Length: 253
Image (tube, rainbow, N blue to C red; front, top):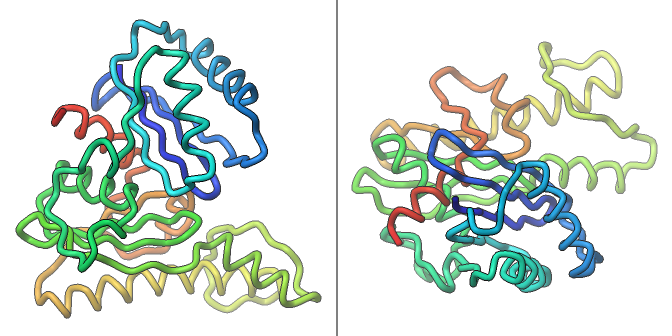
């Protein structure tokens, strides 16, 4: 079994990966105040729930964009399983050619998503990850990582809106049918929902125009379930893309 850990700014996803068709994962809040003992108890409870024995785990892979917490989590997992967790981009390189001007700047989660998507469908392709930030990662027809775009995520935009506009109510984003809201709450939901739908469709159009060819599109991340309902047909929704990336990467080691 492979354990894959994706440490993000808002959530930490930990996956138990037996094979490409047998992946179970849990999302935990990225709590910077947790002690090592807190994480030890949290992880042990998950292992008990999934009936995971210490000798079942052969490899631990970690992708992280939160340096403040990654060493603490790696140490806890390493002590539990008597293994040295391997960090993507530090201990293990994602086997994809990177055309970024400074390849070291590319987040390990972005590379892993691009690599995972390339294993599942033939490039050219774009991975859209709706997380704390919304990222677009472009893989060209040669299977090379080209780069992408980064936008504020849905929750980040909502929090900014509420903090700057005192009279606007907080809303929980839902799928909207009508573009025009008839209440303030519906207007906010319509603005966020259709705004991000238009953003994604519009960026894909721009990418295809720039490269002068059609691109396949994979949607993933925490906001994918809702936003994907408004997107044009043909996009692929994959909630486990990064966990599948851990599996594909483990086969390269």
